Image (cartoon, rainbow, N blue to C red):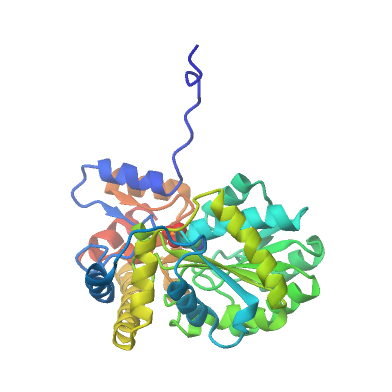
Length: 396
Ligand code: PLP
């Protein structure tokens, strides 16, 4: 008997599936504004200079490919602690595990919540990154949504979020928060909004799961920690998932971390041992190279300065592309004002384009955008801006 015959085909991933279609598209002026990858003016996803230099050093100094420990490289973990938490929290309260990317971190976090905090549920913003509900479902973690995006589809609905958290959650539920550069909308809370969110999270006794995948892409490496810090001032238990895919351009090296903040160091150690058990039975231990690159850069003052410059350059270029898109759209005569994009942060924005318009852009113009209308601004280019805006104008 054949056991594999009859297995149904899974639907393609809503975002990565589009890239497969993009690669197969023969249109010479095609443009991929779907997947969240930074591209420079020549359309490449570059290796940062600080990364190249760190790799050069590693080739000379790395002496073994032996396994890392379950929680990864100690030097890496120390740098993550200092980068993400600074000195605001006693290091003895934070367990940090190096993970295969932010996705790996989120999966470990979800498994931990299911194993240790049941019968927990997790509350996610609506909308959120499509992989969030998928990861939680795969871990067997029930998810619910809270209101996030205003009905104008361009602003933050603080009142709706607080009302949902206040009226619908139970103590001990987890709540997913995007630390900055909300994916897919680019709409972030203000510092005042964060205070109100933190107050509600504390009052409702929720466990914050903070997804920090875009540090440096909002207002700056330090500035982007503000929301997370406000939350951590209000509660003494949280989980933070970070990623170096975007801000180090280390996408394919798979480097991130799951960080658990506990009320005291004894609790931290017990929780850490449980996190390690989850990792051991999943991927055993993380890959070395990406973590070693991050540690090498952040341990070296000169390379850190270079890294900060390179992150600033990426952020400023994305901001300039937002500006150029808004200005160029004005010249098309389409009569549609896109200035709301200027307030939004990070790689993504909700364009307001409908699924039909998104389809037309793909089929007639070879422009690939996620069905929700989410645009990866970091995938635009100065050189192709006119043709992009002409195409968008033609479907409005
Ligand atoms: N969280 C969000 C909101 C993201 O957009 C991404 C990547 O697109 C991730 C987490 C995880 O990224 P990675 O697993 O590539 O590090």
